[in-house]
Amino acid sequence: MPPITGTTIDVDDIDLSLLSGHISIKGFKIGNPDGFTAPSVFELGSIVVEFEPKSILSDKIIIKKVAIDNTSAAAEINKRGEVNVMLLQQNIENYLNKAPTTPAPQKEVNKTPAKDSGSGKKVIIKDLTINDSKLQLGVIGQVMTLNLPNIHKTGIGEEKGKSKTLPETIATILSYFSEASIKGIANSGNQMFMQSLENTKAMLKQGREALNEQLGNVKDSAEKISSGVKDSVKNVGDSVKGVGKNLGSMFKK
Image (tube, rainbow, N blue to C red; front, side, top):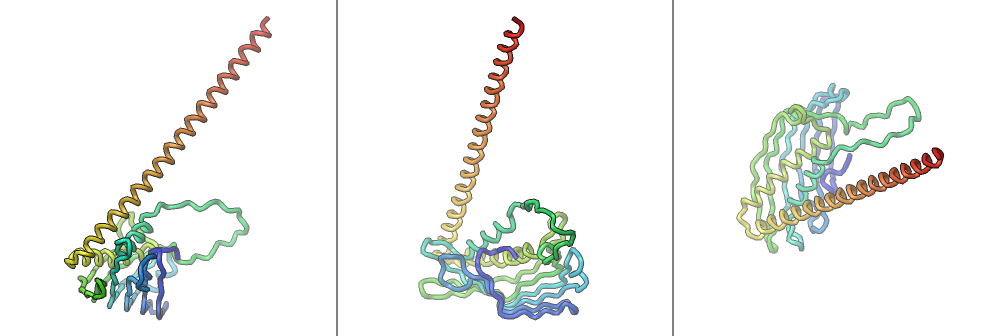
């Protein structure tokens, strides 16, 4: 599976029953971005998934229900004044907004098709709940714990033109939780974290502006090179035409 959060992902236990269409996951942990001290930023205590078994063999997996309980987010500020939850959310958004890529053509070795790993299948989630979520703010050696509102979403992946692969579906679910955590920080009233949110926003904005500037410079350089090549080709063409005229004059004489 391609990277979604840009950090480590660990799971304590998975219980899977394909025949009954049931998956139970415990201890789903998402590691902190670089530069932070805590081992994890998100912990999803219990995840229960109910799906239609027959859909596993089709190109679209139908998940009837996803119930996530006892989740927690550990918000932290690093030495640069950045908030880990917001950086993680940016990584998830970057993954979801990535430009589609076309794989390079490969030589055909045999006629046997490669086995489908399942990551490219489309996924529909009929019902999603994220309950009993808590946000922990570590402030100068003290920990403030806040309750986050429950999340309920339906019809994920059913929207026309917005079908999702399994990695994209996981990224979307994590995005719901990280967005709720960021709102919780903003509503906490803690001035240190609120200021750090603004610092992180500014840092991410500067990064995007710098990237756009670099892309603009590359585009300008490409246009200049293209223009120079066109001028060179034109000059060569003019020279060839001149030589042709001279030769024509000589033969006429």
